[in-house]
Length: 377
Image (tube, rainbow, N blue to C red; front, side, top):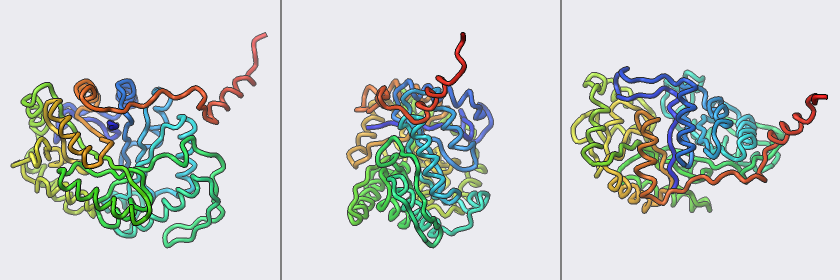
């Protein structure tokens, strides 16, 4: 089992629906979270995409201040060429000595995508993602690629330097529509679902497995959700209720209206878990939909004492989920809560220290150029 954490490049919060306790996404604060996550032994850290600080630049800036932490870098295929994305990922992989993972985000919010010049409809975006990943995977494996698709075209493209990870860094991907599941089955290493109740998650996992088998492939599974864990169950539920204490009905209604306009099937499924109502937010034992009242994307949290949350995680693991990508508000303090209370109770896999013999081209270049510097006489 791997447990990842999340870096809030949009800013952090102590309470939802208010500016009280809000923290800006300053670099010192993000570095503080990254170093805590690194030292605590998390398997990786998700850095999201969208109208936030640039994912690639933030992730790159944190390579030198962390040691083992792997970066789950989210990016959108529709706003960059596959050849450029391959060079960026391979460069990051070399500089970090194999510490990059890629989270492919097709995107379901039409208004947000329009801000980046993306005007494709839902199915067209997944067609583009399919073409993008076809080119991307071939380039990463060292092939020279000429491809003429409906949305993308390259001629004689080739990656001139290899990534550290073979055949390429692990690809994560989420999406609940039929078009998304087809892309996952064809290309993706780890299918990442949002935190739906186990019964719904099991149905989705079974479908992805079946589609992947038709492609002659196997896929691993992860889940993206929040977590509120305390020493006692009462303390955990008190913390959950405190998190939304400033959320009013007007804010909930506005958020629910915004979610209804999204083309994302996953967002539709998240919104249906609470239907814009504060009532009955525990939608499955210890699975709470309160975050999703106002937050888009992953909107559920596991809530309870450490033993109970561990038991719920193992229920998801029994379905085939081996990676948990967690958030908690605020992210610095909650990273400690989760690591200290949960890690001793779970079969957590932590990243091994990088072997000395694994050196990147960048590291070798720096070493050689240091030798060329004028030496004192």
